[in-house]
Length: 193
Image (cartoon, rainbow, N blue to C red; front, side):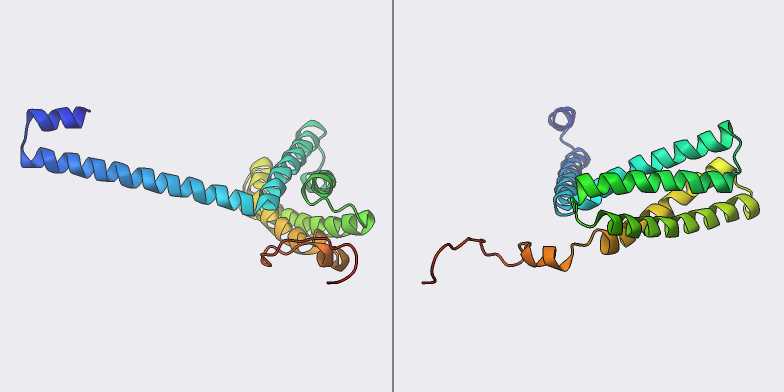
């Protein structure tokens, strides 16, 4: 309204140009913001397992970090040993929550836990190596070094668990409807016509 009032009061070419430019910029911003929101909504719908995995991963990371800080600062445990213990706690937390609430694959719990734990141990190796290098060679503090290792380990473990631990077994895959088929799944009872 201020710009329209300015336009009425002074009809110079500059004021008209400025008003039109402002309206165009505002329209472009609204279009861009709306497009981004729709895009993020579509991604969230399409990749709901990823987002739930990320939320569960954050809970495991927070638990991992809390256990690590308590062990290092409260009990004066050597930081490498504290990292190993805290990672094992985080791995177990994430497996239980992902298995039950995210992927809902209740078959072969021992095999899936073993696979999840191996991926977790590979993450532990990555985390410990990175933490050691950051603390001993890059002169970061023990707590700051731990924070810097977290993003690398989360990305690595998500990718491995998505394609190894929580992939459906062949029997489950055969009975799951395909998204690309486009056909309705109808149960036929009785003889064949």
